[in-house]
Length: 358
Image (tube, rainbow, N blue to C red):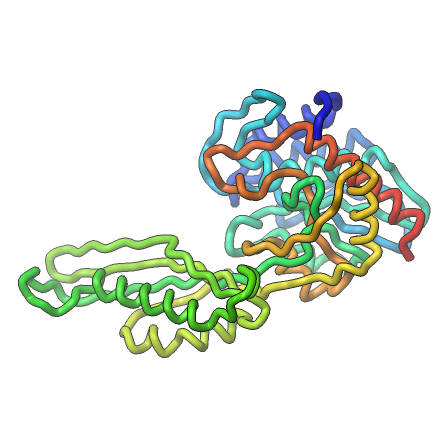
C-alpha cells in the first residue's frame, strides 16, 4: 500500500468528521456535517427522525444501501496527522469506512437503474442500534446492503458473532468480615467463574467464530454499613449455534441458584452472509483491481449487520478501510493511503454493480 497521500478532498472530509465528537447519543453535529457534505456533492440529503444522516444519489428500481455509523465509543484522542496516519476517535470505527463510501458514491455518480443510499446511523456502539432499527421500520428491503465497518482494504467481512449483555446484582445484610460466609462480592466472583466455565463447556472448539466468548465488562461492590451489594456486567459473544435466547435459558439456572437479580439486553444473533452474491463479487473485483489479494473475514464482534441481516435477508457484506484491531483503543488511527485505496475499491465495486448486477 505504497504511494503518496494524493486525495486531499477525501482526507479533509474524514479529518473534519473525526474532529467532531460523536459518542453514542450525541451524533447531531456529525450528522449535520455529513448531510451538508453529501448535499454539496449531488446527493439528496437529510437527517431522519432517528438522527441518521441519509444521502440518496440516483433513481431506479434497485437500491444499494451503504450503512455506516456516526457514533463512537467514549474517549478523546487528539486528532492529528502523523506519518500519513490520521489519529482520532472514530478514524477506524467507523468514520473511515463511512467517509470512504460517501466519497466513492459521489465520484461514481448516478447510474441507470440504481439508487445509491448512504446512511450514517446513530447508536451502533450502544446496545440499542437505534439508527439501524429505525431504517428497518422506515425503508423497504434494499436489493443489497453494504455495512461500512473496517475490514482492511483487502478483505471482505461475511459474518459477525452474536451478543448478549448480562447485568447481575446481588445484595445481602452486612456481616462482620470474620464471618466465613461469602459476601455478595465473593458470590458474584464465584458466579462469574461459573459462567466462564459454562461458556467454555458450550464452545465447540474450532475457530473463535464458533465459540461462546465471555468478557467481564464491569464489577462493582459497596455497602452502607447495613447492607452490602455487588454488581457486574458480562458480555457474551455468541456463535451461530447459540442464539441469544438459547444462551439466556442455558445460564438461567446458575443465575437463579445464586439468588441474583438479573436482566439482559443487546441480544443479537450471529449472522453470516454467503460469499457467492453479486455484492461480494463486486467487492472482490474492486480489491483485485487495486492489485490486492482479497480474503474473507468472520468477526468475533457485532455490527449493524446483526440487526438488519436477519430482517432484510438480501445480499449483504461488510467492507471498509482500517485495521479493526485498533477499534476502541487509545491508538486508534487509519493509514491515509489505505483509506484512499478503500475509496477506489468501493468505486470499482459500484461500477461493477451498475454494469453487471441483476
